[in-house]
Length: 246
Ligand code: SF4
Ligand code: FES
Image 1: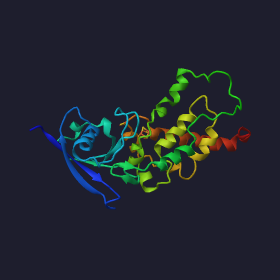
Image 2: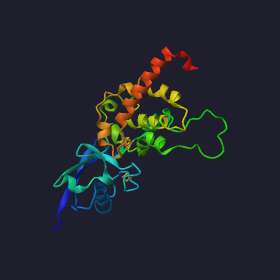
Image 3: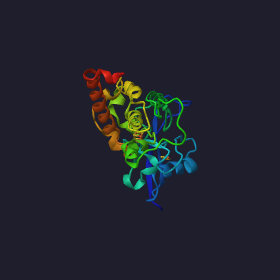
Image 4: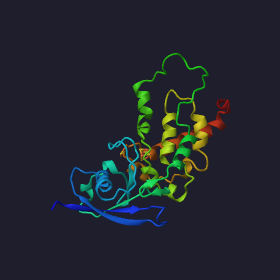
């Protein structure tokens, strides 16, 4: 008989019970399979009631995040082989309300993302004809932070967000910094006013787990520390050179 591996999946079906329970499934152990393949096997062959999110299957859409053996990962980028011989514990992302099985509620992040205004802010009322030009080195200033796929692994790994859900959180701050560093943008002051509020960058205690789990090497921890430095410099400049505030 072909080798099997056991997945212990945390289930939550509110129409049946308010309790979460682990349910075990034996799936074929194939070296080329990722966790998402195993979940798709369960859904197709064993239990069609299992709910989870996924779309691209290639680490791009950011929708397949979940806890695997206690770590937040993209299930489409985590091979079964890594967890051999199992059993493998699969749970919904930590720090988010659960809607059903492995599906989490993400609207808190969407509201926070909107607060940091992750788009180009310009002062010119009429945009010039053509494009806003940018050099390759200006692009490199923010490119890292633009790689975020909104997968929420960093929020799941962040102990500050776990204790204090009002914290803006790693990805929203990194995406705010992405636009602050964009040479075409003129909205840094507006954004920094939000990022420096009580639930912003100063809540971060530099644990660094956000950057450790990020599948895209966005390094939100670095974005937060850079913002702490730049907003502090701006604060002192506003006293020493008040004419710049105009
Ligand atoms: S910063 Fe990284 S871990 Fe956080 S949402 Fe973006 S891609 Fe995911
Ligand atoms: S399915 Fe899109 S990132 Fe995993």
